[in-house]
Length: 102
Image (cartoon, rainbow, N blue to C red; front, side, top):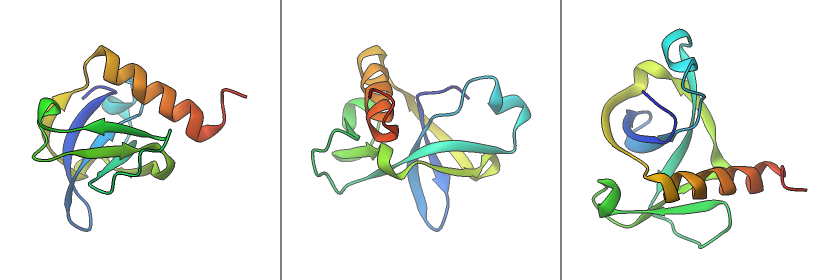
């Protein structure tokens, strides 16, 4: 498990999530921070666009306004890892969502 990977997670229903925790946390922590992926695309600065090129079945976004912490055991199957440009977009959206650019 690494930051920037997309995984299927069994939460209230099975859904994709993007891993946000630092890489070292996955070996020692039982809870991890993720960004849920949704098909509700609003083209906000807190969203990164994802789709078939990232291994997902249809166009969607990771919404960094809705980051959450889940049990690591909820992760079921790795889908893909974000490529460099998408990882940069993830970092930008996270900074914007948390107000760290101010």
